Every structure is written in C-alpha cells, then in structure tokens.
Image 1 (cartoon, rainbow, N blue to C red):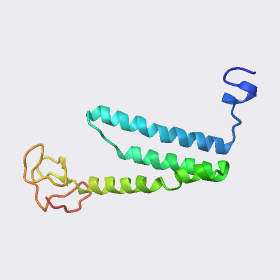
Image 2 (image 1 turned 45 degrees about the vertical axis):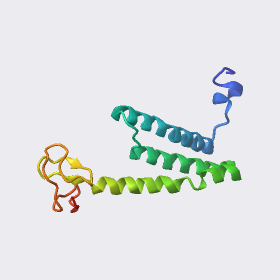
Image 3 (image 1 turned 30 degrees about the vertical axis):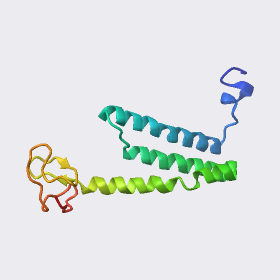
Image 4 (image 1 turned 180 degrees about the vertical axis):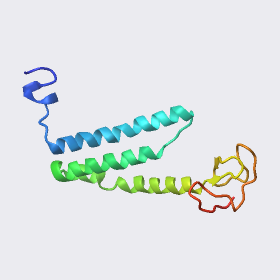
Length: 140
C-alpha cells in the first residue's frame, strides 16, 4: 500500500482527522476566492471584486481561524486570522448598500448606478420617485 499518494499508508502522507479537514477546507475556500475574482475580471475585462470573493474570504479565514484555535493552538497562526474578518464583513456591507442604492429605470427596467440622472440604456430621466428592485425610493 506504500505508494506516492499513500506513503506510510496515509493519504499524501498526512494523518487525517476532522481538524485537518477543516484546515484544508479553509485553505481551499480561501484559495478559490482568487479564481472567482480572476474569472469576474476576465469576463468584464476590468478589475472586478464580486461579493462571492468577500464571502469566500470570510468563510476561508473563519475556517482557518477555527483550525488555528482548536487544533494548531499556535499564537502566530491565531493572530494571522483573528482580525481578517473585519474588512471582509465591511466590504460585504458596502457592496450590499451599493447594490440596493441602484435606481430602477421606469422606462426600460435597467438597474442604473445611484448617481445617474438618466437611464444608461433608454435615456429616460431618473427621478426621486424611481424605485430599486426591492421597492425602496431612491434619489436620482
């Protein structure tokens, strides 16, 4: 059973248990955020940081913090992930506020940026009575 994938009878030479899985899962989730950001940037041909990037950052860092706290118990590792959740949550809040601040065009239904005075698609003037997708009045 001793092979390249199973040296000493262990997969990749690692002694697996629940906290090892949490640690590796945290690394995988944290790494996947870069793939998401790269894909979104390539798709739009401009730098884009989608909310999925921040959700993956938050999830990955919390999984790694849990691994550091409950298994590794290494103060350097714990400190490395103890405060990373703060900017991730802040960016998610900002993203949500910005998304809900968009103005729904009464003419064509396009979701226009909050500072728009006119619809980018049909040119309809956007007024204070224009509403977002969730029905909240927005200024034009």
